[in-house]
Image (cartoon, rainbow, N blue to C red; front, side):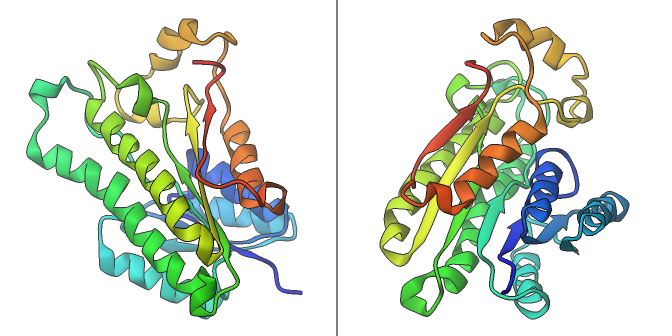
Length: 249
């Protein structure tokens, strides 16, 4: 029996890596994309293979449509039809207030955080949709609590991009349900990854954790658990939802 195939964009680190590792442990064949750090991607692949799973790291610049097309062609050729797509790749862009944002920075954030999930979803539909001969499937988008909180004084541009991801999730879920594809999202809050440090805010989690009702930050594995559930048959009658994973924040 063939293993189901999951594509995890941005799967070499953070939440994406946690999703990829957990998926491999639960019987998926995993295709994970990375932008430039091959070593980190290979480490995730080794972890999956060490547990008896199968994985493939594929370099793909998610701002490049040609790279996205190549990604899906590679998965078709090497692994078989995609069963689950996890749209994780993205970034917050520079820390700045709205009156300091540049057009270039805005374009970079929106291209990767919004355009890329539209294009990967389009390509997944071609392979999953039952009316096109597919067997159905699931798409899980990684949003952010910033979409509702707003990102003021730091990342309004990032928050706006994740608001677009929420709209993509709801609209595509309704459009694709008759075609055998479920679409959901998770909305992480303050999660322990290196995103904050890479953005130049190494103390951000410590500074904001007081606003979390549960009194702590979350882990990437806690996000991954929700992603894997939404992708599974246990969530077979669920589509169009956005699950906050934020300790009540």
